[in-house]
Length: 431
Image (cartoon, rainbow, N blue to C red; front, side, top):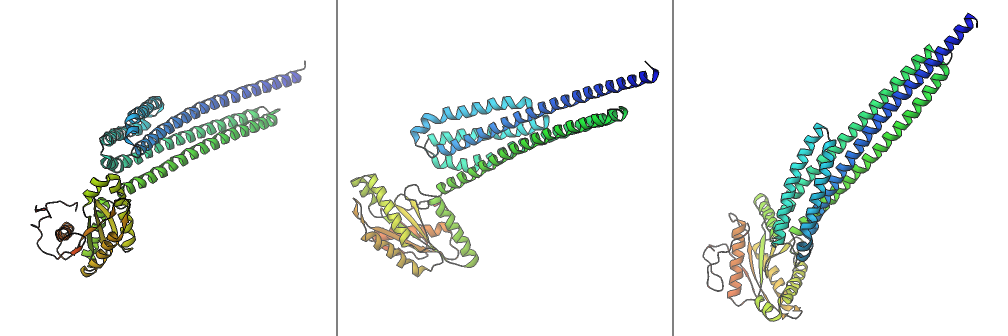
């Protein structure tokens, strides 16, 4: 073989060897990069799934505590603790699986989540115990004022963990992209050296690089879609929790029997009217109504009939009062009406209208009943408690004068007024 031919053959052989080496190096580098990226992405997806499992468990536990307050007592006693313990066990198991996968900065977030979860868990047990003991209002209060406010930051921490996984995935994709660029550079350098096959090698390298970039882009789009779906799910859950919170708030301010506002709600209304009176001098008044001989109705016809009477009275009051006024069940057979922007002389006509409507109504089973009413309008220097006390005094006066009548109270010293049985009235008021 001639020397030039040998050189050509040797050169061609060297070029082929370099191209094989180039192909091997490029293949090995990209395969190793893909393996690392796939491993990192798989690990991040597993962490995201475990975080979402924790979020679902917490949401289910919150819904369970809310639904517990809406079921009857037999269901709670039979089902609450086993269900609660199952949710607690699922949380612990998922946390154990997640903890080894977390980075140090993520474990700090997990520690904050654990502290909040322990607080919420203890509060949930208090709610269950209070409910089983019959303290529904106190259980609802703890759920509204302590459990739900702590659930929101807990879900926020979980969302923060999910966001951290998204950032890690993006870093992995950037690293893979950087490795791909290095492979391309190697291909270009070897292509320049390998003159005879440089064009072919370059084309192959570009084709392979674009294919890899397309795969990485598809993977990035897939992860972006998954993260978006998980984020939307968390937002929907937070919206549902807010709606449940609003429903519990409404229940806490409503009398369950009559559907009217309860004593707590009326206290809030009175405070607002009192503040308006102090700022703008807009007087308001109250009418305290008590059903005459209501105990006889319960004794003669049963408590079911008594409950029906109270419901029918609630309908009468709602239709009789002005649109600007408020009515609440104050307690037992007592009702309180708050008349806004009114003078003292206008209270009696309203009270008499209500009294006559009650007296002229035929109640199912109970027949005809009557009511006594005490009226009082706020004056300067008087507190809400003193105003309620005056309406009580006027009510007792109506009772003492034979019942089925309305009495308007004048602002006098009522510290030593007696009730119809001759005892000093020392009832305390919420305000």
